[in-house]
Structures are given as structure tokens and as C-alpha cells.
Amino acid sequence: MRKFTGDTLLVATHNAGKLAEIASLLQPYGIKVIGAAERDLAEPDETETSFAGNARIKAHAAAAASGLPSLSDDSGIEIDALGGAPGVYTADWAETPEGRDFAMAMTKAHDKLRANGAAQPWSARFCCTLVLAWPDGHNEVFPGTVEGRFIWPMRGENGHGYDPIFQPTGYDITFAEMDPDLKNRISHRADAFARLVKGCFD
Image (cartoon, rainbow, N blue to C red):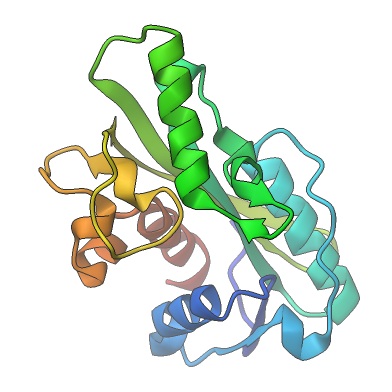
């Protein structure tokens, strides 16, 4: 496992919220965190069929373009009764000509569950894979998950994406009904980050 020894990390995202979340996590290590937008980096096409594959594409593209170690993630929800769908296509299910519509995407998932007669509870998990890549082509991969179930109807106003239909195991509320601090402690991204920090920063 290669340790991170630099003082600046590029995060391969144009999402300001995600960038702030990562910067906060790494603040104790005295690392300067910058986003892809600061270096005017293009977003590469995500052509792989796994979270790790797509995260690798983004991390290596950013590392090669910037000359800095680069971190990326790919994440989504897997619903067992749909054969693991939407999986890596989680965001794609929400795409419309006017932008992403996650209420539509959640309704689509529910309609598919009803159409195939899947018995409840509808087990599901959120997945996140983080990839830390160096300009020399080396990378380290850290997967994270949180188990739960798909519930209907949607509940809650917090969070984003599919949070209103995901109830994590051991809780009676959805991610979208949770205090964001609690969600961030138990989430798939928190699981992956704990592995990243233990592997490359501690």
C-alpha cells in the first residue's frame, strides 16, 4: 500500500459539496485539497461497467493532466431484486434533457420492482469506490458500502440523489430523513474514506 507523502491532493470532481466534504476529512493531515475546476480539467467519459473502473478513469485522467496525486470516486445504489441495477448507471437513470431528475429515477426503480413482482423487503445497498492515483500510473482502490433496503414512498427532504428511498439497516428512517452528520458517519462514502485514510494517510 503506497502512502500519500505530498502536500496537495487534487480531487477529480466539479462538485463543490463533495470537494468540501473531502477537504474536511483530510484537514487533520494538513493537506491542501483542490478541485478539478481549479485546474480547468475536463470530465472524462465513464465507460467502465464497475464503480472501480469508472473511478480509475477519473483519477488517472486527473493525475496525468495535473501532475498531482488525484482522488476520485464513483458511487451508486444497487437493488438486489433488480439484479443490482441501477448500479453504475445510478445517475444515468435520472438524466433528462433538462438535467437530472432523481424523483423520476426513484419512481422508475419502484415501477420496475412492482412490474417484476419482487417480494418485499427490497434489499439494497449504496456503494462507493475511491481511487487514489499518482502521475506515475500507480493507484490504490478503496470500496465502501452501506446495507439497507429500498422503501416506498419517498421520505425526507435532506440528502440528495436516491436518499429518500434508502433506509439503512438498523434505522427506521431514510438517509433523507437523517441528520446529515449521522448520514455522513455511516454512509458508503464514510466506509470507503475510512479505508483510504487507514491505507494511505495514517
